[in-house]
Amino acid sequence: MHKRKIMNYHQNVVDRVIAAQILADRAGLDNFQKEKLVEKTKKSEKKESKKNNFIRLANKRVSNAINSIKLVKNLSNKSSYKYSDKDAREILKILKEEYYAIRKKFK
Image 1 (spheres, rainbow, N blue to C red):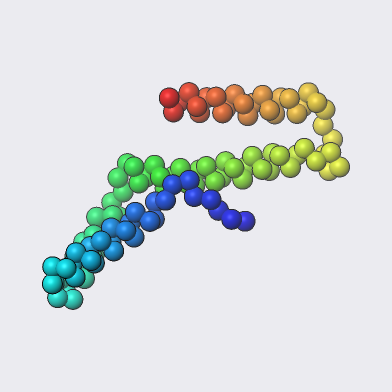
Image 2: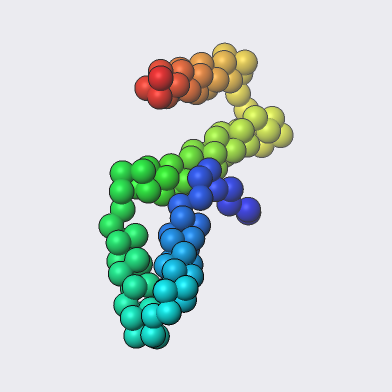
């Protein structure tokens, strides 16, 4: 299954490390100084900011939520499961309520 990323967390770290390497090259630093600068950049990126933490967790949690919703969708297969229209409406009602609760929190 293909995992879809909501926001690109890893790419920001890679971009900053590449930028540090380019700056070190342009500044004419020797290899030792260049490696030191790149390592310093990597270490600073490991300390997650609130934004990076949000992005990392959002990717995991939204992917998990999508997978869970797909599993609930599989319950609609009448050849495998027996359910009434009332059961289906109840599931949809609960999911809709949770969707609106999330939407309200983000506003």
